[in-house]
Figure: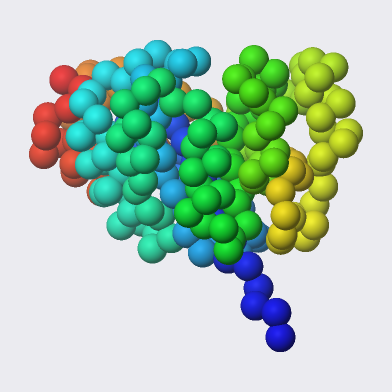
Length: 213
């Protein structure tokens, strides 16, 4: 009897701070794809985003706090340890090597999908993982470039067709949460109570270390 492959998700981000806008959609799709674990991967000097406001040790600390929310969350500092601007291709190659017995899923936001042709070696990424796209407020497939529309025409499918192999794309049916990390940091500067979309364990870590003040 052939053993079913493990299903492993990878989520990259600045996580400055990690919040429910990141975590709730991931948990919504986790059961549908039967994820064994979900790697939370903070980026190192993200090339397409503003640089993190807090130290890497605190970004990792906040993610460690978030693992209290679900046993499938795993904090992975691989990109930080490389000490180079994060690029997705080396990351997926690494996971493909160390988890050769697993099916890999790379979770991105709709904003990232629309900008994917700007990523380095973007067409090679699908050799190593399936992609799950989380809806984001203000971003719609109607705004996609011809390259992205062609990509979806060739690769989009349902979750049931993504249990093995790589290279497929699924658009998740999740509820977009209208919050940005920039807005959340501003709330933390101006108020002493926990913002609604900040998980309590992460809030406790932020208070303990007096972050974003």
